[in-house]
Amino acid sequence: MGLYVMLLGVQGAGKGEQAKFIEQQYGIPQVSTGDLMRAMKTRTDPLAVRVQETMAAGKLVDDDTTNEILVERLSKPDAQNGVILDGYPRNTAQADFLETHLAQKGEHLSAVLFLELDLYTAFKRAFGRVKTKPSADKGEEVYNIYTTPDALDVSVEKDPGALYPPRIVAKLKTTGEELVRRADDANAGSVIERIETFLETTMPLIAHYRAKGLLKTVDAHKSIEAVSADIAAILDQAKAAQR
Image (tube, rainbow, N blue to C red; front, side, top):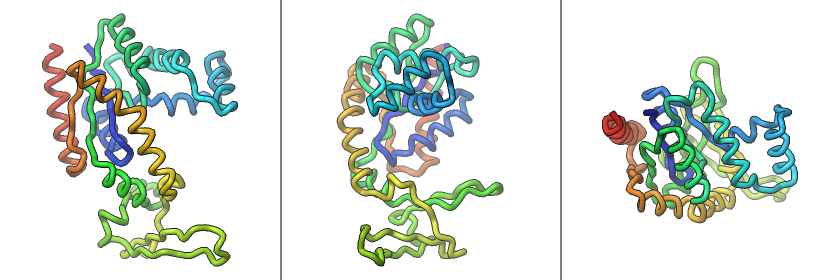
């Protein structure tokens, strides 16, 4: 049987980092329906055109179409031994579809990992996140104005024309390089809106999978390495139970 893992958690909980760890450790790909939809911009098949038209109209892609996108991705050769689901399902109707689809393949969810993080810390992790510009030898290095202050010189820069709010400027103490922020991280309102979306859409899924006995809670306040170790223990146990 394959290893089908779902990642749930508020922004800043470390889902991206842990998805990379699971990919490397267990050899299964991360599947994000959001990424799949964005990738359809360059496709011309009927499913892609339908998604393009929906997104161009500013509408949400409906459950049936989202499920169709997922099924297509799960049929790919690299997904035959399992996947990491991130951003899907978004509601209990999609969760029910996923359960039925996997059962038809003789598969089931191995574990639903809830990376639990208090919302204040989640806000600080997202709003305080800054990165170096990617380079060929190092990639990008991530810092945080709240959790790695010793590495940074942080200041507040006012707009000379007073047309825009002040912006936070973070520079590496060692090199003076000014670090970059994602636009949606730099906007406190956007960060809060993403937290609200988590509370509205993901919390019901957490209750859904807890009731099914599939939910495994992982303390996301720990270091990245400690969270990875906790996840590995859960997934190793899940794999052993499937043998």
